Length: 452
Image 1 (tube, rainbow, N blue to C red):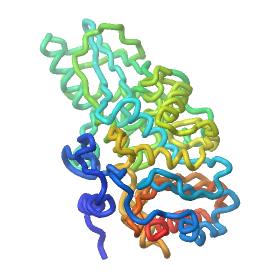
Image 2 (tube, helix red, strand yellow; image 1 turned 90 degrees about the vertical axis):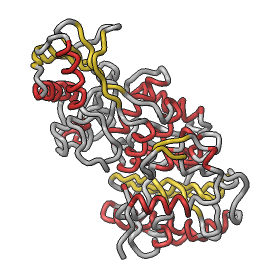
Image 3 (cartoon, one colour; image 1 turned 180 degrees about the vertical axis):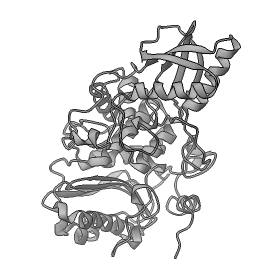
Image 4 (cartoon, rainbow, N blue to C red; image 1 turned 135 degrees about the vertical axis):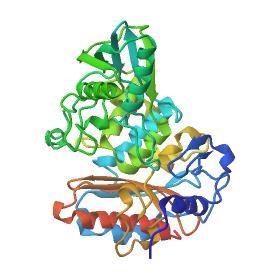
C-alpha cells in the first residue's frame, strides 16, 4: 500500500497523535516544515490536565523488555521514559553512565539555539562598499547556496549568492560602477575551523566541512558534491565573483579582509528563520548546519563564536532550561565526536522542555523531528517485525556512529499518554548495526502500543 504524501500525512499526524492537547492558541505562530504557511505550531505537547492512563514503571518495563533484551545492543544500552502528560519520569534502565549520543546531540544544540535566539531569528549575508571596493560579509547562514532553488517545494527556501549579486549589481550600477575589488570577511566565527575531536577522515572524505561564518553549499566545492573546500569562505567569495560577472560586474583581487565598523551595506540576503533551520537540521541530521548553530549559541550567550564558546554557551543554556548537565561532556554540536558523553535523561530533556506549555519558542524542535517510517532519517526505519505500531506514531531524532545507535523523541501511547523517551547503545557489535537499530525501533514502537 502506497504511503500518503508527506504533507498530508503530517497533517493527519497533527490531528491524530497530537489531538487533545492544549489549544494551539497557546503556541506562538510559526512556519513549519509540516505545513505551507504561517500557522499555529501544532506540537503544543503539554496538556491542560493529565491524559490517558498513568503509566507505571512496571508497565513500561514490561513493554520494553523484549526489545532491550536483544543481544545486538551489546553490553552498554539503556532507556529513559518520561510522562509528559504528568510531568514526571516513569522508567529508566542502564542509565548509570552517559552514552555517546551520535546525532541525537543535535537535539541539545538546536533546543539551545532556539532558546538563545528565538525561532524568528535570521542570519544575514551582506555586501558592504567603500568606493570601488566591496566586501562579502558572512553572517553564519548555514544553508546559503550559490544559485536560487529551482524547486519551490524545497524546504526551506534558501538565500543565494545569485540573488545577492543581483542586488549588489543594481546598487553599483546606480553609481556607474561596473568593476570592483572583492574582499571577504568570515570573522564572525573564530578559532579552529575543524574540530580536533573528530576523526581526520571526516574532513578528507567530505563527511563534514570546516565550519565557517561564510560558505555556500555547506562548504562543498559544488552543489551536490561531497568534496569540501579547504577555505569555505574563499570558495564562497569566488562563487560570488562568478555570480557578479553574470550580471555585468567584474570583481577582482579576491582576498580575506575585515569589514570596518560602519561600512555602508549595499545589499543583503537573509537565511530562513531559525525555526525552519532547526527543523531542517534535525529532519536531515545535518552535521554542518548543527556546527554552525553551535557557534551561534556561543555568540548569543557572549561566549564567542568558537567551538569552545559554543560549547560553553550550550552548557549554560541547557542549565538555564533546567537540564542537569553536570555529568555530560560536550565536544561538538553535531554528535560526530565519539568523546561526547550525555546521560539519557539529558537527551530526552531537550524534547521534554520543548514540549512544556510555557516554552512555545522551542516548538520547532518537535515539529522538525523525523516521523517513523515516513521522512527524514526515519524514512527507511520501522519497517521490520514488531515496529508497525510505531510507524507514523513515533517522532524521534536518530543517532548513528560505528557501534553507536540512539533514538530520542516522543510518542503518544495506546492509552493516550504522551511519553518522551531516549533509547541508546554505544556498544553494539559493528556487524550487528542493522539489528541494533531495529531493536531500538521495536522499543519505541512498544511505547506506542503500550497500555502501561
